[in-house]
Image (tube, rainbow, N blue to C red; front, side, top):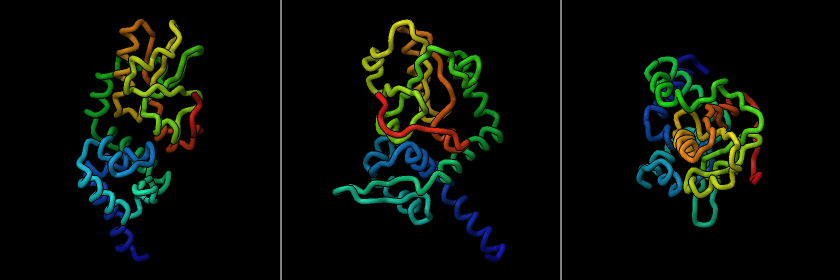
Length: 211
């Protein structure tokens, strides 16, 4: 391939991710496969907008699709896309210090003192939707979706320290879950560990339901 052609291909990727909406769609698909309607719901974008962006993402090889009855189901074309998005987020945090500062100020009382080191005898919970948990989750994690969390959290034994995680460090489901747990007398923290981070680091994950 000629050098100019190589840079043209690189520029195509740049154009593909210049849209915040497309990044949100790719981010959602990195958690689990979804229909257009499901993507519209989880990204809070109009169905027509989601469909338009999906066609561009599919054309340039970021997503693939399959038929499931009357629905078209979209999924990430491969783990390379998940890793690419994870590295984009890390690069953005390095280039724009205000991102890291903002997250630190938001979570300084919710993070584990020892980073991602989970204390013994604690309960690790995944507060993402069930379909995302089923697609992939951290080993040992129990699924307690944030939707109806106060009702679902009743399965947590009293006095058990709780460690929560969600989609990634930009997701606030875990933050809200921690606040609810603390108000109900639990010792609770969030970790920044996530499925995407584990994919990028080639670390183990679990698929299917465990609980």
